[in-house]
Amino acid sequence: MTMQARLDRTLEMIERSLRDSGRVPSSVSLMAVSKTHSYKEILDLFGCSQTLFGENRVQEVEEKFPLDRPEGMKLHLIGHLQSNKVKKILPLVDSIDSVDSLKLAQRINSACLAQEIRMPILLQYNTSAESSKSGFESEDELYTALDAISEMQGLRVGGLMTIGPLVGGEKETRSAFALLRELQQTCTDRYPNLDFSTLSMGMSSDFPLAIQEGATMVRVGSLLFGERLYR
Image (tube, rainbow, N blue to C red):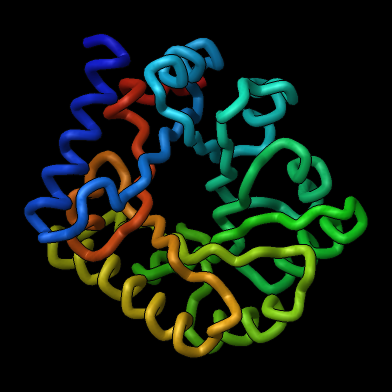
């Protein structure tokens, strides 16, 4: 199957899920998750008019993506970010979608102020309470962070992100996504000066459920690029 055919298939699946959910067409953004795949493959997909890409690791961003990316290509970091790599990643990405602690937010904000930039971020919440996942563990922890983040001039909050459960069935997955949607509404009411319009949830195996539960961005890898290349 060609890259264009894979992209068309994925976009049709997204639109079908939107129709089935009674949602507005084209109201979900597709992020192509390119981890372990080559920059050539990324350029091939970009040539098919896919513009938004996500990477999990700082090292892969450094190794694969040139500073002079094609105009219109957007790159988000979606994996865990260590504090000591914050300064390194800032010039390389358009958004950090995996802010999972107040400490990390403070580190990013300080680096942004020093570089005189403002970084878009998403806050990652651990909706499944699985110890293997990063993310804020409780609403109180998230609100404490947001109280501080709302005063940080180097950050621009755009919404929330989560990863669906690794174990369990449709019921557990749907429950995790519904929790993030409910949290989005609470945050919107509680912090009217911040933007929570982005709800990033759902991957290749579960994004139709995420769309049914209100996702505005889905992160798809294997459906677009094929199975991950481990090294």
